[in-house]
Figure 1: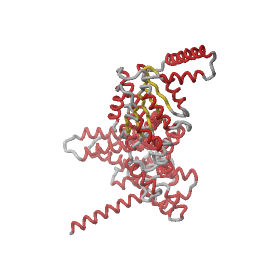
Figure 2 (figure 1 turned 180 degrees about the vertical axis):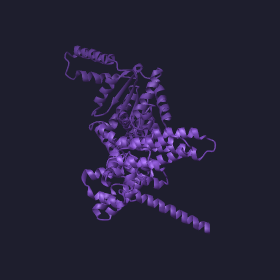
Figure 3 (figure 1 turned 180 degrees about the horizontal axis):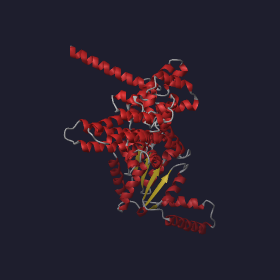
Figure 4 (figure 1 turned 90 degrees about the horizontal axis):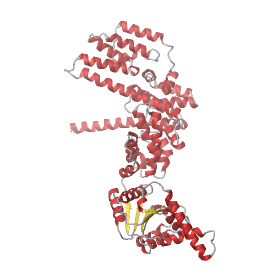
Length: 572
């Protein structure tokens, strides 16, 4: 039944003059209590609720009907106070009534026993009539209280006290569910199955309209999280981490919100979500099933959610979920890397758009295009490579724009301390040429740099300076054999840092060709190491780089096979 239908049924129940029992059944945490409270307040605000008082009793830990009577009596308020802030006069009124009654009894019998007040409550509850009563948490009652006894008392409230009673029920967790069900149909007059859609549950949990709330709501819907409280907890965690990510690219917050939603669901609702230990080792690049049972259950959902593997940054976020707070230092360490990757991607896309106007227009004047190119180049120059600079220099020189010299000068100034920034090999790779004078300036800048990093230092720099394009270029040039040597040369934290630097882009989209080459070569090196021994295979396979290659090669083979079949069909 949709939320709208449930709300309409609750409203009809509240407006009815007839004493009835309403049962709302549904899974735990789906918003039954919230929906009841919301509709009740709306109807109460119009003054149309057909009852004298409203009482709300939780059965959590109660072991007798006497205790339930006490809960009902002590929580009773006037109908016009529903949804209003707490008023101490309610308590004073209850206390005054109890004291007056106790004195009356004392005068008649000459003494007052220690439990007289308790007795007074039970007597008062017996004579309460025409109440609207909500009974919740039946599945969490005490061991000594039977569910069927609760139903018996509910029937008495309806039949003898002219009360309207609502029972909120998660019957999946009742220990005496079979016996209870046999009595339930005899007592309940109006029966509602509360089964909101994932969109409705997320809408109940998150009413806010800010950007972060919208992110979490969308993620919760995508995953199908069915618990309002869990979604609220996740939202609070994302709001906690948001200020720590505010200085970074918006995509960092978006990705962090997606990760916290998934891992938070697994942490807070382990019986309904993918297990945490499975998420820690999952790699959707893998064609081999490390955990076939869990893959069957969750792999398709994770692929639709675009969650390919758990990164080091994801583990930092998980630690924050488990601790209830996030380590700003650890957040900064990993978020900065993701920020730079996103900024570089944006810079490349922005330059590509302007270059398209250079190549694919016969109407746009050169002056405006050159101005845009130069402005974009200067603004994003820290992400520019020597090949980018050479292409721009050649265009400005060809069109006789004097800024061609400024293009080179600015590049040298910004990249004077960046290893590999003046490597002419990149020019040959992309077919660029530079005038002799420019080449001399570049060579002088390279000679003035500090000594070049060793291959080991360059690979290590991926984890700490991965934002520099020159690092990518230098590592991409290393042969597979050099990767193998480096992997064997280090152990412990040093090796862990090296591997983290190589794996950090597994879950990042829009990778440039150098990063792809780096991961290809690292995967090939790990394949060679995996072939050396079973223990090395285990070590190598846990990193996801081999699985990435396997998937790429499988897709390539499938495409080639499809092409071959297509050619055969054409020939026939």
